[in-house]
Amino acid sequence: MIAILLTIVHVIVCLFLIIVVLLQSGKAADLAGAFGGMGSQTAFGPRGSATLLSKATTISAILFMLTSISLSIVATRGAGTNTLPELKKRTVPNSAPAVPQPAPAKK
Image 1 (cartoon, rainbow, N blue to C red):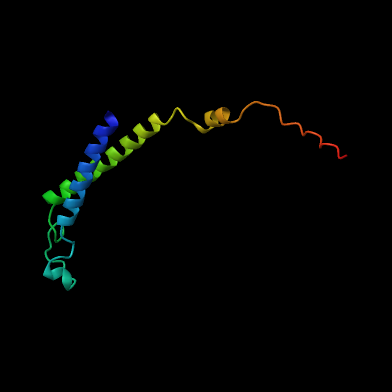
Image 2: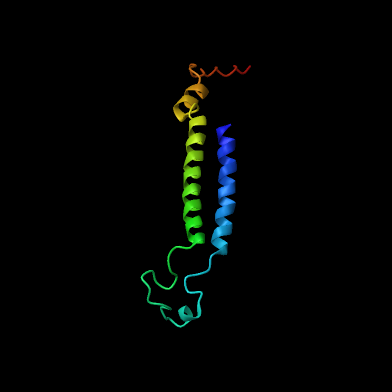
C-alpha cells in the first residue's frame, strides 16, 4: 500500500520537476549575456536573488531524491526474503551422485 502511494507521489514530483525546469530561462538569456557583459553589478549577479521557479526546482529536486530513496528501501525490504544463499539451498538437492550402470553384454 505504501509503495503505491510513494509511486504516485514520485510520478507527480517527476512531472512537476520536468515542467519547472523547462519553464526556466538560461543564465545568459538577456542581451548583455550574449556579448559577455555582467548586466548589472548587484550582489547576486545579473539574475538577482532566487526566483520562485528556482526555489520550486530545488524543492522538487529534493522531493524527487527522497521519494527515489524511499522507493528503493521499500523495494529491498519486500524482496529481502529471497536472498541468494537461501535460493541456493532450495534449488540444490541433497542427493547422492548417480552411479553409472554397466553396459549390457554383447552376445
